[in-house]
Length: 228
Ligand SMILES: Cc1cc2nc3c(=O)[nH]c(=O)nc-3n(C[C@H](O)[C@H](O)[C@H](O)COP(=O)(O)OP(=O)(O)OC[C@H]3O[C@@H](n4cnc5c(N)ncnc54)[C@H](O)[C@@H]3O)c2cc1C
Image 1 (cartoon, rainbow, N blue to C red):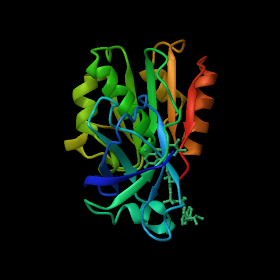
Image 2 (image 1 turned 90 degrees about the vertical axis):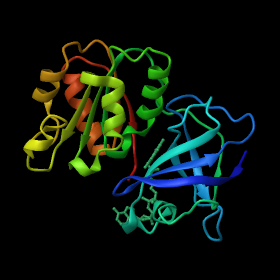
Image 3 (image 1 turned 180 degrees about the vertical axis):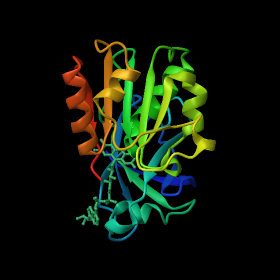
């Protein structure tokens, strides 16, 4: 079933990521980590559905998405970046992506953090977040989505990894600067138990590399590939 919904607000959360809030249809419900297909209610775009993850929780009176805009794709996200309050999106029914299966380590690359936003917000709201960790990898400090919120919710359980920027001393407390991608040694240093749950979500090369290292270290991760 499709729902045509008005945008209540749209704002930047980073230089290329928008937070979009929508009206919520009566009785619409979804689980933290679930996604839906989204299109724009404009001529030429009504059939162009792409998957996005709810970052709101089902009990809230609105729906929220956090969407990375790719202006060079000439695709849906370029158009979403131009939308204003009052414009409309079309969404379908929710469907499963990643679900929480117990305390563990969440590893995200870029916009792949979105299913974890809802899962972590939900656990935080229920007072059950303790013991979980988020390792969030981005190229530069300006790419980190909702860093302050993660730090507030998770405290020391949040590690922001910056892979392609020279270390800036003023940022050293907030981020861990690595010379290149997260590798096996990095995971060994930050994780002491490889029998817990692992949740991995990012672009395909990120997932492939992380899952390879985790398996090597004895883990069995749950993963979701984010197409870019
Ligand atoms: C389950 C799931 C949940 C997701 N949730 C989210 C979310 O919450 N937030 C989020 O930001 N993303 C999310 N994504 C990723 C999101 O779906 C994609 O970023 C989105 O589909 C891109 O749409 P697009 O039309 O802008 O680009 P595309 O569909 O990639 O491309 C549109 C056009 O551009 C061309 N193109 C493709 N790649 C390039 C390139 N590199 N350079 C130039 N042109 C190119 C294509 O050929 C096509 O013609 C999710 C993905 C999945 C699978």
